[in-house]
Amino acid sequence: MRNPKKDLNKKGALELSINAVVIIVLALTMLGLGLTFIKSQFEKMMGTSTGVQQQIKEQIESQLRASGEKMSFPREMVISRNKQEGLTLGVQNILNEQLNYKIVLSIDLINTDEPLKCQFLECTTNGVPLQPQAIKQGMIRYPRDCLSLGIAASDVQNVQIKAPSTTGTLALKAEVRQYPATDSTCTTTASTTYSSKLAYLTIG
Image (tube, rainbow, N blue to C red; front, side, top):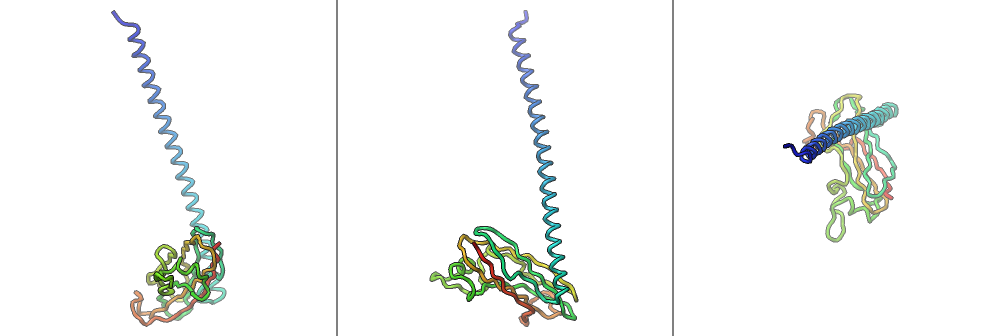
């Protein structure tokens, strides 16, 4: 003889299982839609960012061609404390041969406020900076490899500054070191200053 109570329990368990499967399917569907939306928004943001960067690059290169200058670097900039900001460094080859060069950044100790010196530079235990180019790892990021430009060509490089919590003025010197046209790896010691500029970065 069948037990109606037992059959009812089985029916309830089956309905619960079906409901659980439906909920899981709906949850996975919503998750998929959410991930697709986030991905599309991220790709849109990346596309916009790339477009802006390309626009800035083209603008700087156009200004270099119009002015005939060797180098472009912002003279002044304000950076919020504990924030990371990007600077653009443009280089134009005005030589009649290939330009092989390296970018060298250093801190101008004379024009930099005292509290900021050891925030950006390696210092002794007495708080004396070791040298203007001994920048702490992660504080200023920029391409350090050998770069090349053909005749009348130009390019724009990105410099990332990580501002500390200390306020003040940082004097950042950007120098383009020129190597012989035959030295495409920039290994010779016979390098000269192609151009240099000083930027005053106010951290506050």
